[in-house]
Image (cartoon, rainbow, N blue to C red):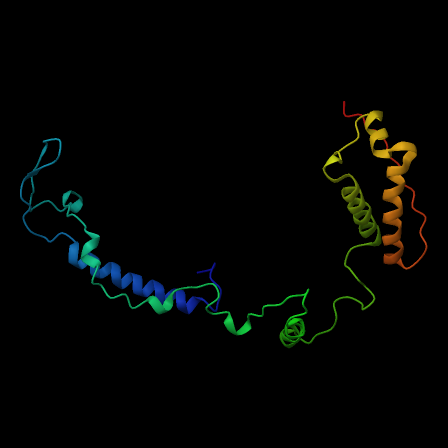
Length: 202
C-alpha cells in the first residue's frame, strides 16, 4: 500500500476486498471435496490411484472453466481506477499560447500555497550560482550552433579548426550570442572570452 496515494487507498482497499470475495467464492465452488477420488489415467497412460487416507491434496485436480463465471454479477465496475476519474475537480486544461485558463491555474496554485517565510530572497532568480548559469548559456549556444556535430571532446588540432570556423567566425558567433544572454542575466556589460584547446586522449 506504500505505492498508493492516500486518496486512492480506500478505493484500492475496496477493490482488494471485492477480488478476495470473488476468489473465495470461486474456491468454494471449484475446490476438490474431501471424498474418494476415482482411479484415472493421464494422457501418457500412467495410472493414478486416489487414496482417501492421503492428506496431500496436490494430486486432486478439477478442470477450471471460465465460462462458469459468465453470469457472475460484477459489482465493482464503479470502482474502476480511471486516471482522471478522481481528479476532475482539480483538473485545469490550459493553453499558454491562447492564454486559456492560465489565470485560473495561477489562482488554484495560490489557493494551495502554504503561508510561510520565503525560502529565497525576492531578488534571487535561481538557486544556482552565476557561474553555473553562465556555463549553461554557453553550452546552449554551442548546441544550437553545432547541433549534432558537436563532439564530446576535441582530441586534435584538426577538430579545433572545425569548431573555430574560418578565421574564428563560428566561435565568434557563439560568443556573441552567449554574451547577449549573459548581459541580460547579470544586468551589466560582459567581456566574454572563449577558446578551444585540444585534449590528448592517449
